[in-house]
Image 1 (tube, helix red, strand yellow):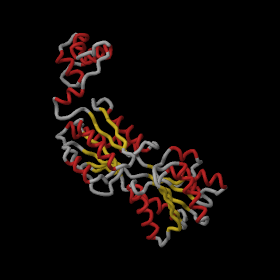
Image 2: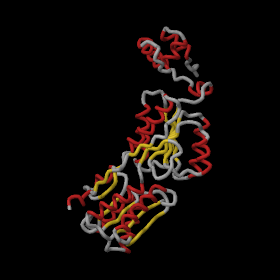
Image 3: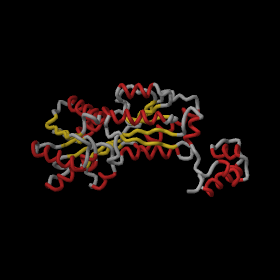
Image 4: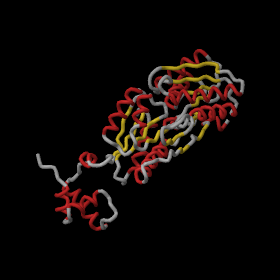
Length: 336
């Protein structure tokens, strides 16, 4: 095995002092452009990658941003992560990701592990953490940004939107389009608190128009197209006179339209299908599915931006609250 290259090796290869090489690699502004270019070229040439762990031990934090998301089953949270990564590009900070699978105990363990690495900040999903997790976050003394939700009181900064309002708004749009006999299909609502909030907002809109919820079906576990297909079959078998089904997300709605196409159920003429998130997959079904399109990548970028501002400033996020509301598309209903 060859010996790992050191900062001394970089300095020698670039023809500068060790101090200059160090400052150039950290991106400090008092190093000439020529020296920075020589040091970076030398580091690349000899295969130098540094030792950020050692550096973090001598400082109050590492150049890491922790990002905690609930799932990677569809593109929703990978797009948030992509936004974070894009915002951090060229800053010297690196994102470190953890996936909770909607398990609150796993979320606690992931956050506790991340905090042990002394990250510069944390980006987490949602506002409903357990008391134990909230104690970790409150005591972390680093910038915290909670994302994808603003229905509640954030611990620090927040980037997202109201899921209750999102459910309410799409119900109002569907009612305005002439739909009156609604069903609801959802999954994982005991753990997916944001999905439960959308359902609450949807039902509120129905109540304001004296419209009953004709049928409701739910399933445990994470959402999927297969689960959506089964829920649609159950719903339409029990309530064939429905004229609209609201699914808790687009995965389920896509499964619903697969079932309808197979059974010859006309969408949206016979029954309209609505979901949430605005996933690209629904574009493959000729605009038949109504949905709320969320600004997932922009949410990730904004969250990372808040962390960077805090780190470069006085360490405080100022409790920023950025709202990026979803936009509604009614799909084929807009043509009727």
